[in-house]
Length: 183
Image (tube, rainbow, N blue to C red; front, side, top):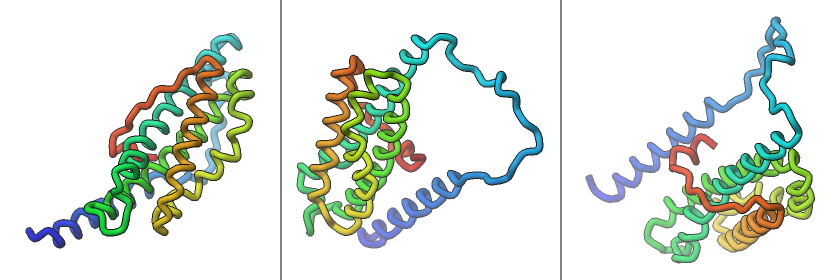
């Protein structure tokens, strides 16, 4: 198969996979006539357990966001893959867009997890605006604005240092490509 035709097939398969992954993620608005009792949902018994689990979930979510950012945004950006005319630029931009959306999703989850721990809540409070500004990164990448990478890397580093200062050190965890498409 010639190279341009192969790239077309790869792009078509990636688009179909992305479309299939997002189609299954919709919210089901159907209402149920049965009510589930509130006591049926398991929850930690003490506030200390809730705080411990909140820190663990924060570390996991922030680590996934940091790993995705480093693997598919920062490394290609430093290697010059996003520059016009670079080999593999389009594929790298698609991966970076997916990684940006995934990282934003995980940072929002980490921010929600941090609300279970007062120390993490205080440490992350100044970063709320920075996390919200990352929402537009995939659109900026599609538009060719590669300067947005620095802001993304800075925000991830700030979240990591805020977690470390609250006693929850964050280590990069690189998600698989299928994790990115799942969101």
